Length: 261
Image (cartoon, rainbow, N blue to C red; front, side, top):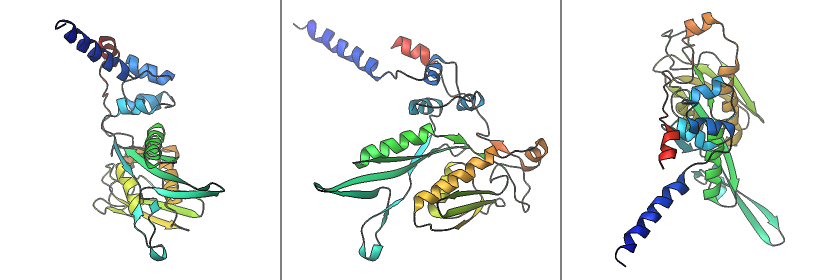
């Protein structure tokens, strides 16, 4: 009897890591596990679509996450404290059916950012869904020095003026000189900081009480920093860099580790 007990414990220990192994379903996930793709830059260069959040976790282990304050607690005359979950409810014959929505943001503070929206009947599933959608929707941001007051050619601001619009909200992002800081609304500042932007001016119009539209307008403006056409002379003069300043592969032999396990 004494010899059988350790063998049973060893069998349990061997079964646990096998259950934790990630089994990708998409083509890109299989390429990442096989070691064919070792950095997030290769994904965008080859034009591949990210369909699994685990891909971003492996390629970007330094990724940071945060939740934006899009909701508001109940208070007298609408003066409740801001919170990360926005609660809505549907009235039915059975009673009120509440739902919670949240907006998550992920980024490495060096040219990559993603924003995701999640909604569920409880707070924890809504947060997990938002984080998963944010990782799937990650994209590159172009940075540079587009301010005529600076001209240092370092990626501390945005290279040129960009605009974004969602609903009645319109936001304009303008390059600022080095050391000026991020001068804009607090939730928009979180988004810009997560993207690695240190100096910028912002001007917004419309009904800004709905933070969702304001953040989506900011997201649209950041997309334009990459999609806008740029000449080689503009890239050199403004010091434009898309994505990380020093891209480096962060994956080690994942295929070999899975085989060992």
